[in-house]
Every structure is written in C-alpha cells, then in structure tokens.
Amino acid sequence: MHLHVVSFNVPWPADYGGVIDVYYRIKKLADQGVKIHLHCYTYGREEAKELEELCEEVCYYRREIGMRHQWERRPYIVASRNSMQLIERLKQDEYPILLEGLHNCYVLEQLGDGKRKIAVRAHNVEHDYYQSLAQAEKSLWKKFFFWLESRKLKRYESILTQATTVLTISEKDAQHFRAIGCKQVVVVPPSHSHSQVSSQTGRGAYVLYQGNLSVAENVSAVEYIAKNLIANSKHSFVIAGRNPSLELQKRLKQYQNLTLQANPTDEEMHALVANAHVNVLVTDQATGVKLKLMNALYEGRFCLVNSTMVQGTELGEACVIADNPAAMLNALDRLMDVEFTEKELARRKEILAKADTFDNFKNILL
Image 1 (cartoon, rainbow, N blue to C red):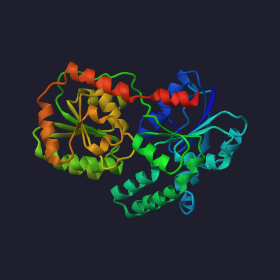
Image 2: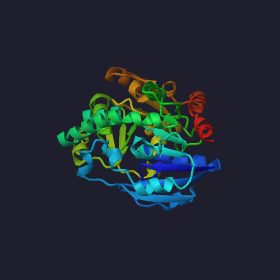
Image 3: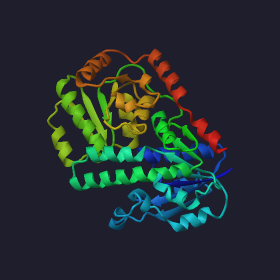
Image 4: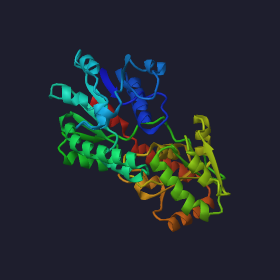
C-alpha cells in the first residue's frame, strides 16, 4: 500500500514532541510494508537523508513565513503551508493521504471532496492549545499573536468534517471532534521510540524534571517546581532541557539542592531519566499527551504528576498524582523512601501495553 504523509516540519531529528510522533508513526508504518510518500514543510530544519531510508520519496516545500500571513483569515499555521506544488503532486495518484495536524488542512480545502481518503492527525485541539500558550506567554506581542491564532483556529477547525478520519491523541480530544461533526474519530496514542519498558528497579539519587526550557509552558512548570518543591525539600533535584534563558538560569542558581543541565545530548537525557528515582512532571495545559511523560514511564522509575498531565489518557494509573504543593511534597518524601520494585515494574509494563493501541491506526489505513 502507498500512503502520502504531509508533515508540518521535517520529522528528523526526532527530538521534540510533535516530530517524535510523526517520525515514529512513519517508521512503524514502513515496518508494516506501507510505502510512504513523505511531504515536509521546511521550518528551521534541514533536509534529512535519514528519512529517505524509510520512505519511497521525500519532497520538501518552503514554509512561507512572514507578517502578511498573520492578517489572513486562515490561521497562520495553515496560511504559511499552502504550497500548490504539493497539491499538484497529490493529484497525480489516488493514494490515501495522512495530514499531520490542522496545520496541513489547506490540502483538505483543495482535495476534500469525498473522493479521496484523507485522514488528519489532530495533535491537539489547536485553539485550546494556542489559548494556553497565550495565557503562559509574558511577551505582550506573542500573547496577542497566540490569542488571535486561537480565535482563527476555532473558526477553521470545521474543515476537519471533510476528512475521512480524524486521529486524536486522547479520548477527551475525540469527544470534542465528534461534537463538531467529524465523520470518524479514533483515538491513537502518540508514536514514540520505545518498544518496551526499560525502567530500572532499585533506587535513584535525585528528582528530575525534563523538558524544552525555551517553551513558556515548561518554564512555568520549572518555576512551580522550584518555588513549591525544591525550596521546601531536602532531596536533590535535576532540571534538564534545551535552551534555558539566562534569566531562568539566574533564578535557579539560588537553590543549593538543584543542578541545572542545559542542552543535554540524547544519551545524557536518557541516562538522566533512567537514573532518577522520581520523574516529576506538571503542566497547566490539558492538551495532547506529553511525550516527556511517555519517556519517563518507559525509561524511568516513579512518576509524580499533577492530574492535568494525564487528563484524558490511560496513563494516570501508572503515575502518582498530586494536585497541590503539600500533596506533592508528601508524595515525594514517600517515594524517595521506597524502592522501585519488580512488582512496580511489572505493573508499569501491563498498563503501558494496554495504553499502546497503535494497531487501531494501522487497521484504519489498511
């Protein structure tokens, strides 16, 4: 079988949430014998020979960024991905199409006439996600941009009713898309690099938070953890992630029980997750499934989260959930005093095996 996949960015290297989902979905489908025709918009990333090893062909299109698209009726993330060259290539055959994100639904405008099988991977309810970005952002200009984009996305998402199938991250998102009239909606958890749970039993020596530290949502989480946990705990903490600002680095220097590891390599990050005793993750955005949580569950020991982190997923039973600083501190003290046992590991494997339903996606496409 042949399948066109249209990606919002070049999905290699697979080093952040959205492109991790895209890359490992392509890999799993290719492993099943699907011949992938990959179309990528370039945005801050280079063409990648690694993708040619998985795909029948890889085509690149320049994303047309610029102020002029910010004032269009279409959302900026759509208006800047409107290549007619892509449309003409898709018209050359009748293969089904997978659009990665609402970002690529200009294709639906052009080809969504019911004659072509077109699935859309909804990585989020995008207008909710952009509203959350607006709330977390401190820059007034960025806050306005995210607010405006959220309004445009809410108007635009009705385009998804023209898709053959919408593939959502969570049941919560699925309920939203069913409510707006999408024809077929199926929950497909995010694709990721893990084929099996590799968590180590025993004890680790520290508590870890990991995430992209240039993202406002993650900076907010770090500030919450620093103020409410690190400042009031005797335990050692590590915060690790990409591109922390100088301002954030300066604020974190005041904590004697904290080590900041900026821009760790993939190998260093895997080791940090595996060797921690507790991976602590909090968010105030109930959007999608956080792939850093998947990494912690597959590679780490105990996971301490707030309920928003696992809302709408089946992953809550694999975590310890606490929703206020006092409860989180109590849970942290308790977890640091106990080993991660073989029994805990077996339970983790059982929960994650139940939650990974990739075959649903494979069966839809075939």
